[in-house]
Image (cartoon, rainbow over all chains, first blue to last red; front, side, top):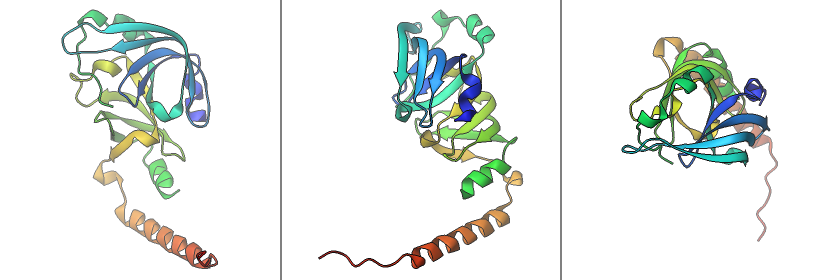
Length: 92
Length: 107
């Protein structure tokens, strides 16, 4: 998992197997991709409403449930207008 | 190990990874590991309007267990080499199984 070392202490976007998207700061990880994220925010997309943000705090997510870990480009992310983003929820 | 070695030869190529949840991500293959987890650079979600989730993400790590397909470009793949390696792998697996002592099933 040295592949993920560069992501530690960076803002990451995690897509889970059930289709949920969680954004937070990656603090720790292990061989089976279990991760520890600080200041998690879940972003819920839908076709009609604005993106919903739910603050979660410090989370440990088990590797079995993780699909993607994306490195968030903070500049682009700050420029995103969450109110106007529409999209289909991701499939499980 | 065969496909791990194969994907190592594909590092630097444009690939499209289709996940089991139907999300398709295009990007340059940065690295691969023994679990066939992939790291992609400069990603673009194939059907961007439907899934704006990754708009602020340029590089990502994809867990091997969620991959359905990896789409490659044909000119970059040496199929003869791959066939040959697969044949050798199948032969060595066969030899390993024959070398194992046969255990009689317990009645």
